[in-house]
Amino acid sequence: AQRVTQPEKLLSVFKGAPVELKCNYSYSGSPELFWYVQYSRQRLQLLLRHISRESIKGFTADLNKGETSFHLKKPFAQEEDSAMYYCACGSYNQGGKLIFGQGTELSVKP
Amino acid sequence: DGGITQSPKYLFRKEGQNVTLSCEQNLNHDAMYWYRQDPGQGLRLIYYSQIVNDFQKGDIAEGYSVSREKKESFPLTVTSAQKNPTAFYLCASNTGGSPLHFGNGTRLTVT
Image 1 (cartoon, rainbow over the protein chains, first blue to last red):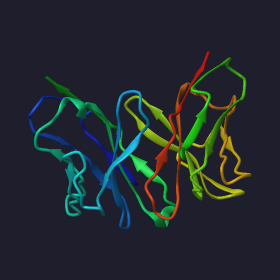
Image 2 (image 1 turned 180 degrees about the vertical axis):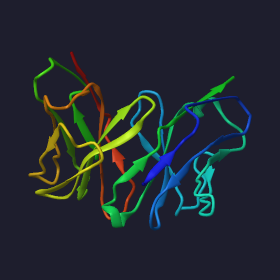
Image 3 (image 1 turned 135 degrees about the vertical axis):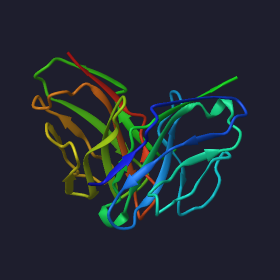
Image 4 (image 1 turned 180 degrees about the horizontal axis):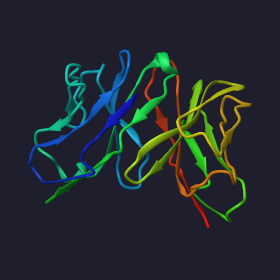
């Protein structure tokens, strides 16, 4: 079955601490992996995708095909990083639709 | 200003009534999607459409219906057959392998 799992519902860290949001996936074929973010009162928006291999707002994510993981990392969390984060996977051979994880709420405390 | 517009932002209905949620995009995207967002369950795909006059069921299509008569519009009807209709509904679109672009959502409350 195709599935995305984010094991942590809530992750709370202090400002300046490293943060890692976990994501594991189960998908047949060669999926694309994404991280989407939803800040308070804003629409869900793309944070980064694995094929871009870029860092956005200090966040990076490496696709590990052996462990089927796509964890999101940032070395020094900021208060403005507080938001809901969703991991998603999909394939354009599957019509472009994405399967989303349950989401992790990141809370960065001062 | 290009984007996806969902209306209304909040919708209240009595149990047993059908209700239609609007989604319009001016991004010239080919594909459109409806997701349902529930706390602790993430986003689940209801229906999607890759071209006009064609659509496919997602993972939780029961109790919902859609139409795609125009490229810009993909309305979702929540029927009385949907057992737990109270939720936050998100519309999205994309084209040619681009990432999904989301609307602001509609919060439906059925009492």
